[in-house]
Length: 97
View 1 (cartoon, rainbow, N blue to C red):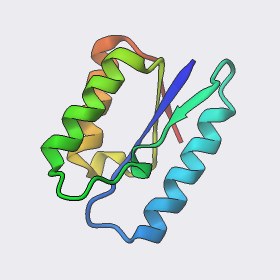
View 2 (view 1 turned 180 degrees about the vertical axis):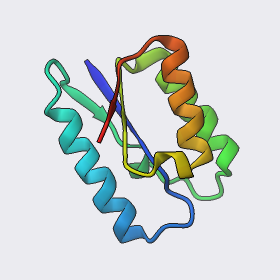
View 3 (view 1 turned 45 degrees about the vertical axis):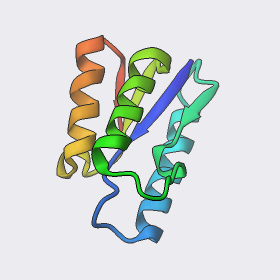
């Protein structure tokens, strides 16, 4: 199974985001059956806007993700809220760290 780690990125320090997503990936790997993880913080495309990133992540979640892992304070992120709603709509199991 593939887990997607979701949480806020915008407006936070690189160090705090890196640490949060690293912990999220570790948590995801502890879920029984998870063999792959998607860490959206690891993709950085020069010049991409928030809508461009979201279209990429939405397609990935719809077609390639089996489990969603939500980082603490995910509710403070519009993108993470959208990813969470999509996971629920798709019936994906959602874990909260």
